[in-house]
Length: 112
Length: 113
Image (cartoon, rainbow over all chains, first blue to last red; front, side, top):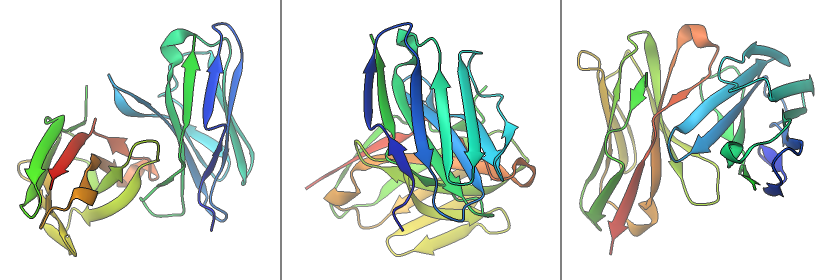
């Protein structure tokens, strides 16, 4: 199995631009999580989906952030407009019925 | 308010000695705990877990201890190896959360040869 696949690995964008991060979960997994890692706050859960349905988005910092999961094999996290304080590493993770998540390699986002 | 706390940002240990990483939690509803290891430029990888019905779980050189009354868990690595140098995250979940994990901020372990 290829594991959780995230793209791009690195993204540098200018403030105000739209950013879209992509995730392909492990085939057969039914839960998907988006996390953000910063020095100040560590690993924060932004949103998670169960069977493609958003269950808890209370971690999404602002309305500028949105996430979708149109099918079981794909999810996006969009930031529009982006700001320098959004700079972080964003991780996608997936799991199947057990409380152990498998993480992708992350997307390092830099907003200048 | 942080529900999972790792109060030591870093730990340095000599190769061959024991590494002890600590984690405290505040939510009494947590019933499942995990440790993840993270190397630079990689995602966290699962290391070991423990259910609240147990107080110890062992896997090779790694042992996790759970003290429910103190709301404290620890990860012991014996013997420590240079390849264990990484950031270790403690995580917890409760049965009603459908599996989402609450993470601590991590402890960076350095094992010196």
